[in-house]
Figure 1 (cartoon, protein in one colour):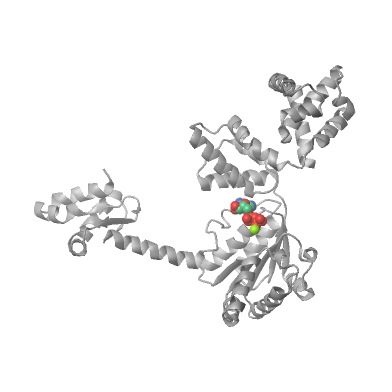
Figure 2: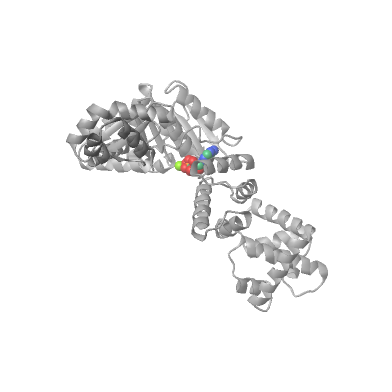
Length: 435
Ligand code: ADP
Ligand code: MG
């Protein structure tokens, strides 16, 4: 029985049976929408709702308080009305916050050597809008957290009631075109020049677009002139973007230009732990370490990996352990390393073991050759998307069954021969970190 129903039975003890049956019995408790400080009951019609509200609401609240030890507010309403209220709230939220992701907060952002400069810059801007670095320009590679950081500041400002606009260059451009077409440029200008904070993502797309650069320049001047904060991101330093008007490029550097670098291992681990917490996925330490070492730098992959692991484990009713993780991530890894070729891997093995590539690919049977060939084949299989027949052809072996036997043998070695395993790990690291 739900706590809501329990409370109604307690109430029953205190009122007449007629009253109970006529009114209270008709209430339906909403266990989904109720929380520890708001309880919601639905009445069948407005009459009953009003009657209960005036006569029993206090009592119900009191019973909850006794039962839970904390105050609650009680809502007696009609079901469809509740839905309406919710819907209105949703629409309102949508129009207000539609573009800022609420989970992009400073709390959810893990700081390490690679991003602490950008983090500190954005944080100080969020403490003192328009007063410290204006504009603040953040640049760095894909998936390193630029949008997250910029929106973290946006969320802070929005919670202070400031009018924040977050837009990508593309949306800004589309908006511009639409207003030009509708001959409502005054409204466009009003919108962008009167906001308190302007966040523009991926500024590199302004490159070689003169019309919008001109418009953006005036927006920039208007905001900057009135001390309104501007935050910009791009994948490169303003100097390197190219195709930008001189006056824009120089303005981008007026405030502070901060870069984000690819995360170090520890930061990656911290980010994975945070994402697990947010997405309620439980992973052991060794799995987290494994994921952190296999993803290169793009943090965006982490979320994809977690949801993939979660989905697979649910579908297949298995716990997420290391072997399972490795399996699930196999395809992902091969995709990531599509720039690795059989030649590159063979050359690396060749260099490391001091055996010519042509020898590795020959049929020679000496111990050293066999050793090098095994390692090369294993790494080619692990690190590229080549099929077994392709590997057979490359290494001059009879067919895919020969490769398959070989791989089986190698896996046994990895299990039983610690030196062999260490060598494989060492070479894997070498090859993948230089690719
Ligand atoms: P960018 O805009 O630089 O391409 P995003 O800001 O979109 O990258 O980040 C990609 C994903 O990685 C987002 O889900 C973001 O929350 C996450 N992310 C990136 N860096 C961090 C970090 N330091 N801590 C937590 N999450 C991060
Ligand atoms: Mg981004």
